[in-house]
Image (tube, rainbow, N blue to C red):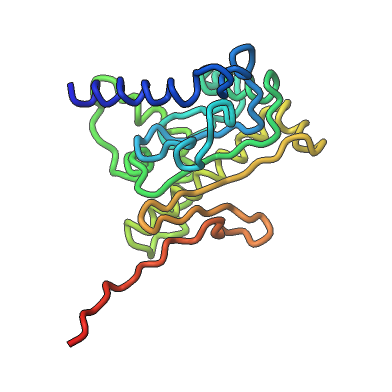
Length: 221
């Protein structure tokens, strides 16, 4: 019950901050006009709005295990595809950010040795959308440690999702016309840094560097 009480008190604070007269929701009640679609992970540590200090209405968020975007096919999962379609075609967002992160449980499940079939295996079935990434990482990073392979897979899966976004014709058309921009971001939980993929450098580079770790002050004798 402690969590429930925390949530209720939290909503009370939200109500006072955002729902009063002349507050933010006075302009949001009729419609939303976010400029950004964020495709993030379900991980409880990686809330896109909290990480970026965003207010309600700033971003349209789609979250799933490992922040994956399936390719545009007749049998594409309608939940993810419909949310992306609504944001791009309905809300006409100007940018899409695929936000991945370190220590992702979905990627860990993808990289783990295959288990015997369980009752549902929903996670394994979902993560098959990133199977080409797993195979490439195991092939190209075979000499690396398990942790390095996992991090490589986390970053490569972001790029895989960006490629898959371009399989949707209405996204590809808007990108070609310069009306929509795609970004790949990576939150490094260990260092506290935020990285973005640079197509020019073909690597993830810091948008926000890690916090400096200061040595504790030593007492003078």
